[in-house]
Length: 116
Length: 110
Image: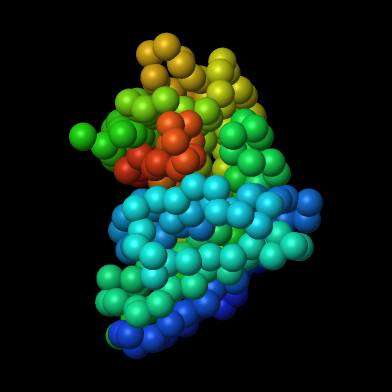
C-alpha cells in the first residue's frame, strides 16, 4: 500500500475521444510523475509535475497534457485518442523535486485504458 | 542504442541462488532507481541510489558513477522474488526525465 491512488482503474474509450485520469499523491508529496506502459512493454515517462509546474517531459505529443493541483493531486489528459494509446497509465509521487536528489517513487496501481 | 541497458533480459534460477541483474547507462544522471513489477502491473520502488551501496533485507544495490553501472543483487532467492526488475535513471541534462531500461524478467523455481 503506497498511499497513491488512481482513478478510474479501468476504462474504455473510442478513437478521437478525450480522457482524464486522476492521481492522488501520498500525503506530503509535492512531485507527481506519469508513465505509459503498453502491454508487454516497459514504462515510458510522460511528464513530471513539481509544485504545480511541469518539470520534465518525455517524448509524448502535446495531446498528452497534465495538471497538478494545490493539494498536489494530478490529472493526465489525453485528447484525440488513438488506438496506440491503449495502455496502463501509472502515476508516482515523491517528496521533493528530482533535481534535489530526493524522491523515492511511490506508484499507484494504474489506470488501464482501452481505445477501440 | 538505448540510454539504459539491462542484462540479462530473462533469468531463471533455482530457489536459494544468488542473483545479479546489471544496468548500464550512457547519460548523466542525478539518481538511479531499481523497481520491481509483479504480474498485474503494480510497481514497487526497491532502491534509489546516487552513489555507493544500499541494502534492504536480501536485496543489495550498488552503483558506480564513474563506470555508469549499477547492479541489483538478491541473496537466498525465493519464488516470491519472481518479477520484472526495472532500472530507471533520472537524467540531469536539460529538463529532467526518467529513462527506463527494458526490464529483467526473473523466475525463481522452487
